[in-house]
Image 1 (cartoon, rainbow, N blue to C red):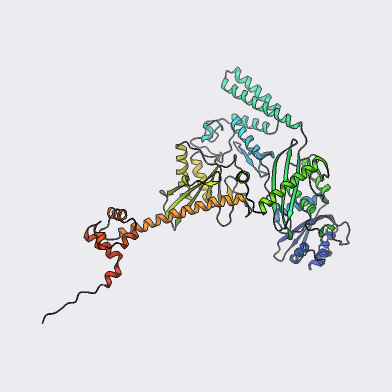
Image 2 (cartoon, rainbow, N blue to C red; image 1 turned 120 degrees about the horizontal axis):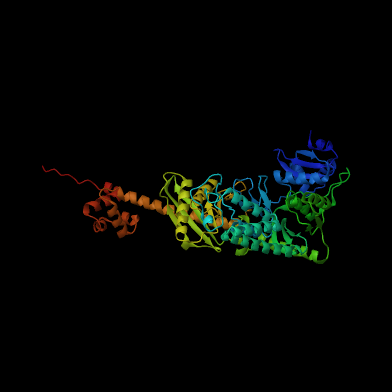
Length: 635
């Protein structure tokens, strides 16, 4: 059955349709109130020379469909299939990062506190999202400082001989070492952290007050003082929350700028009546994407009027909002858009149903709300210029983006990058280069000879170098870098992590960038590699640091190889030992000069016999070309 015949057999019920190409790949996913009418409309649009739909229909050879009961189910299913299949004719949210959550790993024997951007069904408790992103890190830091729950990568299913630095600076109860804490004390800290994260301030204050009084009666004054300080902290946070809740409801505000088939979108997050953060999105080559906004209500096959527009902003925002908000734990009560779209009421109802509160998606036309939308549009124009008109972003903007993408607890000021270099295991060396405040700091570069590893073992070599570097940093009480970057894949990353763990540096930010694929792996979240756009200034920064590390390692390896070759060649000459070789190099300056020296010059440095051996070694052809003496016979 060909495509046209199959379309005529489609049902007239709501559902989702999937166009496929000759390789059986899904190239477009859409939803419809009436499957047959919706899918058949593509044939008419293609026949009317609609460029976008024509491109789709030239590739499509088959169509599948899934029926659902109502439009809400169709919206949700369409969103899930787009995220799973990533069809190339659909609008895809390529920058699909979410704002951070604080995660409490309740399924572990000793729960930890992490900052994460991914929600998983793994038995953990997630709190958030937090705006701006660094608020999650401040909350996690408060939990470390106040409740002493760790966020390290150490496996707490077994015990270790000694705790890490976090225990000694009183940021952790030390569950990694037997006897430092008790299960009861740890459970109490977890319960306090839960009440704090859940906003149960009154319950937490009551519990802390009771424990403080009991500790005072038992004359455990240090413990009572700890509870007193916690009470003060919780009370201050509760006061801030009461002030914030008196302001306006939360809202998200969108603006966009489209030009030359390229699009920039800005999203303002308003919380408590104030703009607390901004998010940017970019798309290129939009001319091939199919933007379908309206579902035909009948079977006439008439194409929607929006297909004549050069850029269908309404259809674009319909696709964007589905991917942004469906399946998210938090959805603001208000979403302000610059344009109308057909699915707006249905999407608002679905989001309200899933979030448990009323959600309004509005298109303001006047007043303060419209001014906010216009402001977002102005910022989107600036974002467009910076991305597509090759305007160099500020250094601080790049640092902020790097902090956000790699989930760093603070603005990155210093990056130390390592690389291993060898040729078939010979003369293995390593390099460390330093990026600091926007520039490569060559005075801090370091090079390493691998001392404990034999043969080809990049992983062991990386472990040795990282251990040597940061053991010295600890001994000299210097500051750790904002980020340690490894040139390599997961193997090198885990080797570096093992070295840091053995030194007790369990919270040090660590990442690697794999060659060729340009995939960034963040330690602790290796199953979610980061793939940045090729135009991304953050990717360019990481590549710059990585390439400099590789260059420095190669140059050092080449120098070591030259030294090895130089040494071996001179030492192969009879009568030349280590001291003679050193004397020759110091006098002539290089092996090349030794090779070019005549017999007289060589004799001034070494004995006659040795000089003749050296000269003969480097002038074999000349010596061989000399004629033998003529023997004469007397008669």
